[in-house]
Image 1 (cartoon, rainbow, N blue to C red):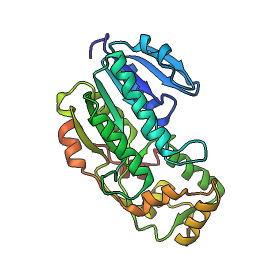
Image 2 (image 1 turned 120 degrees about the vertical axis):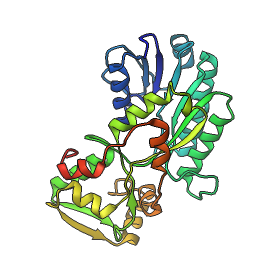
Image 3 (image 1 turned 135 degrees about the vertical axis):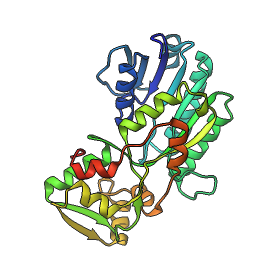
Length: 288
């Protein structure tokens, strides 16, 4: 990729963004990365820390960039930060930034399980955001990711924290499955989506090649060395409803119990990337 290729990344301080930025920087992509929080910058990168993503400050700096990767989103609501405000209204604002800055391509991280028939608030907000992007007349690639795992994603950090306590909690049976994808593959795929026309105006599941039950994932992750404690699902939901600091939030449980599956074959075909086996990473202890 040419050195003058220029990309904007929103939500730059997050786990996925940090890894994608590092990958793009290593491939000589010029970056302007934006976050509400301070973050460490990479080579070929200009960072902008802005609590409100002030358009008057940002637009002149990103004018005529080649693309924007939109990674701002929340998976848990609060009284001050809800799905509509962040996942929908803020996405509309980013679309407006793209248009005013004459950026023609947007890459967006939605969610596996998003559909027009979903009853879940989180997925509804993501579906609405997707549609604003589709209707924007911008070129787009919309990814619907499953669990994106690496050394320091939130899910992995959560499991490591429980291991230190000597016990991993599983809500319900643990038989529901997840379809995790490795962050290194995600970074490569997002990189390709910026330049390869096969990704244009596509909605693509961003998932690993294997589904695994939550219990088996936890056991492999901990190398079968940590005690597993299953708790009643009703209790887990009750704790999530009354305690904002519960081990699992309401939507965490919804996503797990939803047992959503994605089409990894389509992802491999379009990207021409053979996905790394998360199972092998788990067995080797590479994520610990």
